[in-house]
Image (cartoon, rainbow, N blue to C red; front, side, top):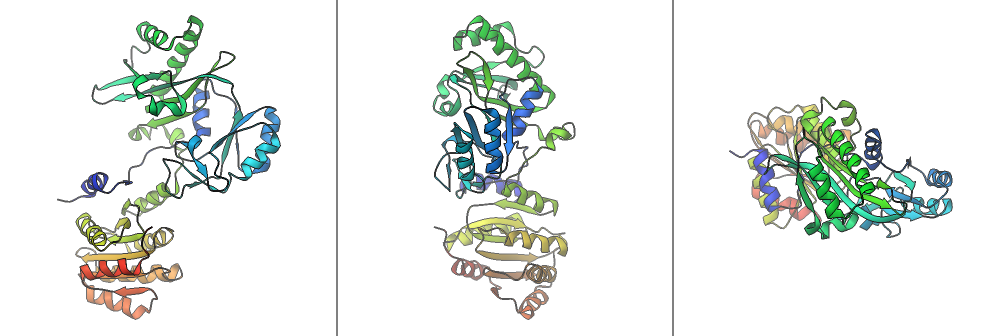
Length: 417
């Protein structure tokens, strides 16, 4: 039996890049720093700004070199590039006026990194803190190793942006949640990282607080990267990444209340609340189908005729007309979608209800601005097709044959570059 779980696995293997409908808690850096502060982990005081004027004022208060970071739900900001001036998403500024100029070129523009969509993510917030004179960058993380069914501590003397190219320097130390950070673990870390006794005392305290946060907040990942040693000899957490157990949401209501969503995640959430299954792909042809098997067949035909699917939206068998109308409206707002194929085989879901939803959605959203091809087969299909033909909607054609419908929408939709 084909299910949406199996379709997700199939697309992960054969149709990368792929985004499955999996909800995960994502925190912006401002929230991460506050969480670290709550558990007495050392972070520089930071300020959130949304205008260039605020950025200028904050750096004036800091009264020294400052770091400005774009607040988006993606890694690699330091190596990313803005659509405005081609500069990165992490910048050091020396004066309030320089902060104003940089913030002007960051706020309202799109930042593209290795972890963002091709067009980047729009930046509406910046996080600013006093620059730290860095003597060395470290990588510290706690997570679970499923293979060993145990928590593990990961450490490296090559932190920051260098961690990905220095995986061979990553050390794994297994520990128990009840036994915590033992003397043996401390001794190993001190020897491997070349730390003095006084430095190791500070690191031990950081590890103890990391573990406290890890356990109390139901974390599955706590990553400090970089954890830096300043030229003054102090250890400071400049950035952090978290993962949390989604099943612990009811225990961590305050924490999950901080959740930030990318536009794509918000789109998925809204559709899920309507009871609709949604899979996001990277093409420009939107698909509305009923059933995972029909979705797979639809994608194969679109690909066969040279097109690329932007998504699948499964209306299922019990969806209401009101939910469908809202779903059409959401799909229409997806700027990537340049054509829509509605492919329904009526069984439990009636084709006339689908037709009514199509007409209603068009009326509520000002008509279809892109080509729409409709194929209805099954229960009340003739009635549904009649409703659509009588609607007089522009940019909408009816094609009862499956293959011809797929061929038609590919022909009517501009090709993806």
